[in-house]
Length: 147
Image (cartoon, rainbow, N blue to C red; front, side, top):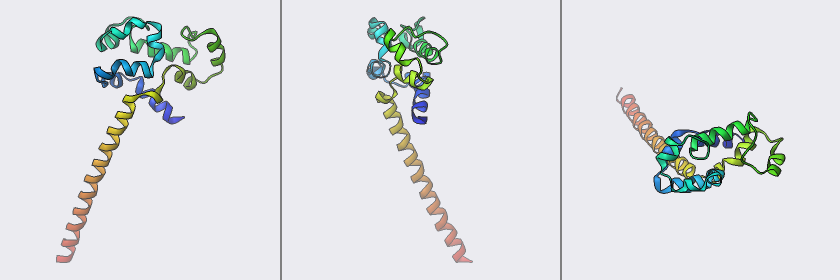
């Protein structure tokens, strides 16, 4: 669906991962990218900076892992993460379906927070625009009445 594609795009951005507070960072990885820690459980003790900036392979860098998953989903490389039976089940999957196998966007706590923040900002902007429009209408009425 379009909503899943939008969420997948958000989760693939560096700003998404950098925007997560350290206290929630490892939990978010476990929820959204469960296969990341399955590949290398020792990464749970690494810092956010280490997992985002200093890793050099898919098992120690979130962005390299996401890139690797993207290549698997696009069938550019073989799936070396899933079990052989799961690879067989996924062989006819679309790119989106394959990505959703590894990137659990609907489990993201951070995406909910971001969406809620955006909704609140939109409400505030709407309120301001309405107030401005009401005042402008009021002023226009006063100007027309004075004529």
